[in-house]
Image: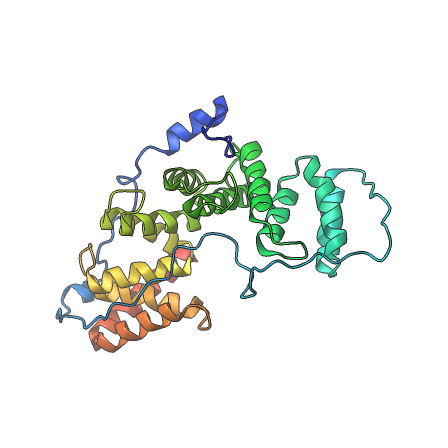
Length: 317
């Protein structure tokens, strides 16, 4: 898949695979239904839900709360001798050991050696470092090109294999870049291509971040027809994988009946799970949604939510 030019070009093997996974999956996705008999008899009072602004769709790598401003790479006091490795795997492992020890300049040298040999995890790690300004000067275009190389050369990797998570994340991150474009570069905003990348990662790899992104776009009607029911199905797939924002948004939809049949207890369960996994310093919107839902819930709603949670935990175990 060529992500850098104006036209998307698929290799023959990738083309056949994309054709299969791009088939609409609505019929195969789980339907949201009330599964507890207790919930069916619960009195349905109108929930006093106040609109809580959702955060912007963010699928690019985050820096753990640190600003993504340019950070100068540390300069060695003297020129370093060229690194020599027996294999790209050895170079990658050396790079990661150096990174863990705080020697990010040494990590970059080793990772770049592995990347020139096409090592997907080295390419991905360099993409992350440049996107975050982590030990190198922050450079979104360079990050984009590293992630593009991961996707271009590994689109057919088998899901569940060691490199699959890195390849899938590269597709999602590239989709994030296409959502806004990279100012001053050849990477222009192209929401249609972003949707294509999210769809591939969501359908072929089952990537929770991609599934959440598709759900958000369908809910907002951005790049895709507005369709709350299909949005809820994508969000449900991501929520089942533990994606916290998907759990929160799905829960809010079910509690309020926003485009889907209202299932307050099930929504309360999802919001409770999201609240447990949220970082209050960054995810205030999740905390607020959960507080509102809990304040409007009846005792029977809370009992039914507890039953849903037991069923959810049994499925995961």
